[in-house]
Length: 240
Length: 83
Image (cartoon, rainbow over all chains, first blue to last red):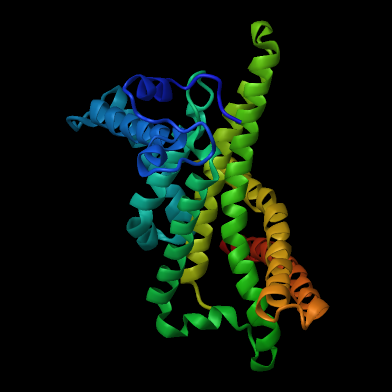
């Protein structure tokens, strides 16, 4: 389900670039012009632009913009430090905070008519999740060396044939559930909004769903960030 | 972040996540079993790997469910010690 009007797609079509109408483009250029790709670039440009505008010159006595970012970044940093220790939080802060900010903005942008949430596509969420999944294994290997495999074999040796497949399955289930939960929630919001807009847009039918959409967007981004933090800290701590 | 809000986020993440994780674990187990049966062994072992995969998937689902319960218990114990 696509939005009826997407500004960036219309502009690209006017410029003569091929914008695919199906879910997947065929050529490389078509794939680059997918709405979720162009809106991902838009969100990135938005974040960079806002950060440059408000943080262009850092001052000792912060103004309005700098105050806002200090609140956001400071809040996130203390939240990470609480959950996975200050050292890990310092190391992983840039990655997790970037994901959090990107997901918040990407979720919220879909509420504006003419824009689409990049996270309403499984490609975006699966990409984010694969990065998190691989990173938590890298953290585990770096923290424990080769004895990281002890995380997967359980407490006693004669339970290995039973516990190894179970641990592996539940580890892969993390990847699936993390990506599909974010994708499903945001796509449901987008689809519901589009249908209500088509059915009764003149009577402001989408408004209540938009209010719920703000809540869902923020909550899903928070949940993604928190689960990322939990996985990282679990990979780092000792096997039970 | 205030205590109440961060506790709310924790609860939301844990319990909002568990349904999906449970289902995903079963789907992966069952899918792996069917793949082993139909593609790797070409249907000669027909129902067995499917059943084993399903059982392992369900077990993995329960394991991730209990992991969340144990995590909460550990955290409660930790906060008791602090107090």
